Amino acid sequence: MTTPDGFGRGTGIAGAARPPAGAGYPGGPLPGGVPVPEALAHLAGGPRYWLPPQPDRTVPAAPAAPPAAPPGGFDVEAVRRDFPQLHREVNGRPLVWLDNGATTLKPRQVVEAVAEHCATGTSNVHRGAHTLAKQATQVYEEGREEAARLLGTQDAGEIVFVRGTTEAVNLVAQSWGRANLGVGDEILVSAAEHHSNLVPWQLIAKERRARIRPIPLLPDGQLDQDAYRDLLGSRTKLVALTHASNVLGTVPPVAEMTALAHRYGARVLVDGAQAVSHFPVDVTALDADFYAFSGHKIFAPTGIGVLFGKRELLEAMPPWQGGGNMIDSVSFEETSYAPVPHRLEAGTGHIAGVAGLRAALRYLAGLDRPAATGYEEQLTAYALGALATVPGLRLVGDAPGKIGVLTFLLAGTDPMAVAGALDQQGIAVRAGHHCAQPALAAFGLRSAVRASLALYNTVQDVDALVAALQGIQAASAG
Image (cartoon, rainbow, N blue to C red; front, side, top):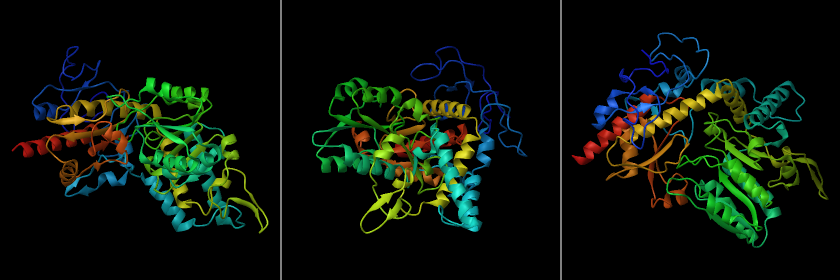
């Protein structure tokens, strides 16, 4: 049985009428909406919580046979059928995967694409005269074209394959940074950054005698825009900026911040690792100079990632690594280099990874992205309300418009112990510093628990998390 918005009633969705205005939601009412599980109300001993309305769709909670996809909107149950790992058990319980911020699961289309390459399509790419080399090259370059489409650039030559976001940032720091940074120059880095968008800048700044200046956070996890404007100046050469924080979920106003940086002649590198799977990205609209993401954060394999760079910047960047694939001609007297993007791709690429990336991006392109984004936004709102029912739970970062990154502490319980207890119930979350120590330090923390959502997660997953946390608190209190 389903509600009109398509959420199944597998955990007992209430059939009550809409609550009166202003009722039942901590911190203010959500306008409109549909009832959510009664289970949460009795677990919390408090009021029911309400989820904003979603696009019309009907999703059977436990269909006997795969139904036809609804004519519009987002069919989460159809998506879940494509992810084999969602249908296994862990510690005798159905898996609830809430560790998407660390890595996303892979749909069968990606698994099949990688297996097909390894089983029947193995070959190196480029310059091959035989059929398999040509076929592998076609898959490889189609992967580049899919990445360009994902990011909204018309020029596939602006797409450089790397191992992941970390390597992308290091490439820009070691190539563009070494060529463009000098004594006294300044690099602005937001306090919300993953270490991968901080440490590479520290390394090159030390070498070039440049200076790192942090963009501070506000108490809710937003970047302090007044402080950012004050930090910008004639010495600012680069701004390193997350598109979505991996520990706070904050989505900064990247386009506006980029426009401000450009007024001072600074370049902007955007870490999109946590953004690309949650909402559409258009690097042209953002006017980003560089944009990086990792394949494994967008349903593709590990070990493959993408760096977008404006063509004029890539063409001016000297090679970072030397070797095969990035050369035009080599002699002991002189070496000339291939045009971009190949000049920045030394060595044999992760060809099987690109095959998987191509499949993942095509899979994502086949979904209704606006509807999927809307679904995630509503599930995040539901999760925030549900977590508020857990006594002693402190949420870290509540910036408006945040993605489904839910970092929290449970009073009296060590984060690692919480994660271990959840694992015993089949619920996968992460605990620790999340490679974002400065962000946690801004909240006076060294460690926290993080549950992170993806488009295949459901209300039932959130309910399982909340019920488990209630149990942990009850056991701790007892």
